Length: 115
Image (tube, rainbow, N blue to C red; front, side, top):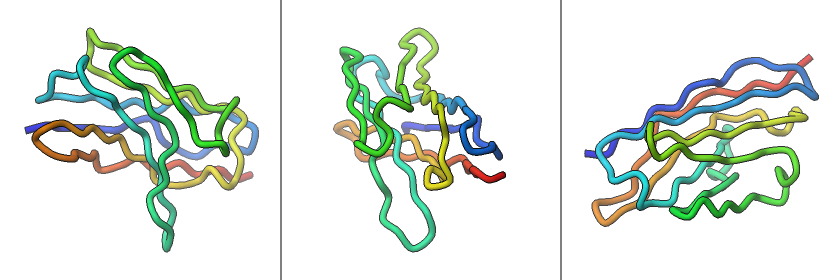
């Protein structure tokens, strides 16, 4: 069973930075793309960033130039470095991995951007 655990969320002022982490177990991590999504109440979950098995990354237009996704295939982790945070970035952030066994999600980590 694939298991994902996010951490690193918290309260930050506008313009600040946070680094989210996602620990993955139960999957051949290095073979799969990993995604970060976010969701606010009443809205659909939004894809923020993705990194494939070759470490090629893609970003939502709203975060390009501010967020950076990375992966560590030794420790089976993915990271989301978030800089210049804006109030509209506030959300629950989820880590996601899909393989032949299904579509797997962590429980999420809350990011609050407020002065």
